[in-house]
Image (cartoon, rainbow, N blue to C red; front, side):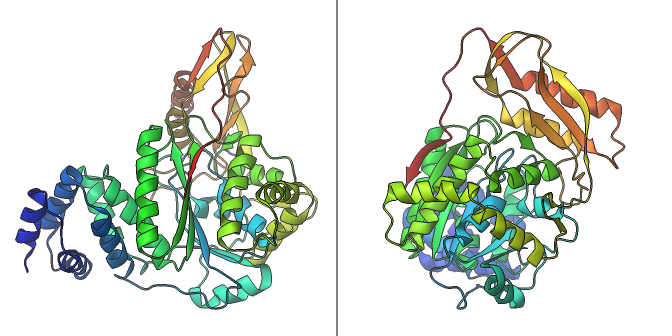
Length: 441
């Protein structure tokens, strides 16, 4: 078996055998296959696709390329959640304590943000003292104490995927459903999940720009999950505009606190409720409740103090500073440095999440390279969103930087220009999109 024959087979639209895929992943992992041959096969896959068996084999081989985690100490079925990314995506910090109130133990391995998608690790690191680098050997202690633990991804988890992703990024081979699906699912499977809920975001601020693309990716991942013996459900959510009222690290964690104390924005509550609903059912922790009653109970626990107490336990157990009645103590303070005002009167027709995300990166809330520093206090607050009425001169957004920041003035005005481009105002009130666009099982 040689790599040249494998490239030719996929170039000529043949299905690769399990042995060929195994040979490929092994060679990627040990470095025996040169980058130019890896890139050639990636391009052939982009052009000619993969069938369900090929995608599943690729996923399982990538998952097996490094360490695979197991959690015998969890009470029940190990569950996990993955989001394909977006602007203002603050679901994980709410979801973990919410699940814990139902007895669903969770080990969450998360990453840092790149581009304008916020990273869960960055959000938790905005809290003073919070230890995001928990050793896997210590996970059981945190789970026993609180029912959950969140940590940065270990470097030996699906190493083949890391190599392939870095090459895809520079060879124009990112846009491929089989490659995206296998990348996501390999990390979830290696991470020890038996039941997986996928938040597949859809719209201007997401990787999948329209519902058809999002549905295709969701279906591919569900098929992989089924063939790999994992319960898998996909919730397709709207990301045409930012989620919630803020984007940025401290700003979003402040909004998380509002959500777990019963004052969350409705779109955030809707998304976290649906994901919690699916995971509780897959974990078989419904306690005999009907679907309607379970949904009502999930919402109730966001406002009756149950989720708040578990959230406090999560933060303090991992070293985060906490003041009762105030919440977490953050590493910086967001400073409201500019308001962007509407040039027109009318109703907000759209808020392009991609441009909002780009503006937040300019302010310092995101990074374009993995080594870029983060301004934890930077971000954007939204006074109006789609369907809201506004008068000329009223504020669309507030731009924030950290109190310790020395952001150049030109970047502040560049961010303002992006905000003005992101907002469209018109005379007619538009129909609001639902936050949940579809659920696939």
